[in-house]
Image (tube, rainbow, N blue to C red; front, side, top):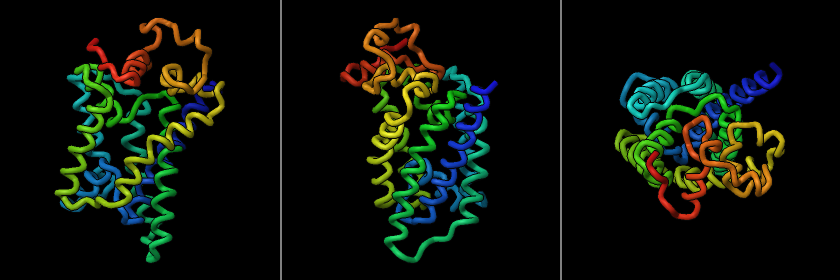
Length: 247
């Protein structure tokens, strides 16, 4: 019961932080991450708020899970609802700073908060977000690399969002190059006993995060498939430049 409560708390805190970081990026007006460029573009062209646009896109992406045979968890549903509510609440609370240094600080803070929130909500292990599940589902079903699938998806939504009027700028570049290293940093500093029991455990096993001994890396592939359907052995193959094999 205590562990379930801790996972639920991490999920909720992570999703709230993620939604608030989205609002911070919008108010900084220095550029958004690819999906939020798309959400903002939709909001500009429709009566929807950016939060509602995020939820609508999330539901649409969930429908794309059906042919991929990816199963949602409670965290998947919470992702759609909590982030949508939080980003609109954040937009109502925050104002756009007039000073450029403050806008830059807000943008950097938003990326850092986004990384921490990502570690928390994925670490809860209660189901991936709709967009994460789309990526992992496509990787599993097509056998294409994680890099290729993620880059293709984000390049597509970024382009469409920009054409709709979404904000692309230096913040977009900052997010693209900063979010990965920051997430890895926060995973790395997470206590190993916590990490080994979290949604990051299989990724940690396949990396140099040191959660388990080298002997732990010799487990069979079948025992190393995480709840999102990604084989940790495939992560190792990806790191070595070998293509992920079709299941």
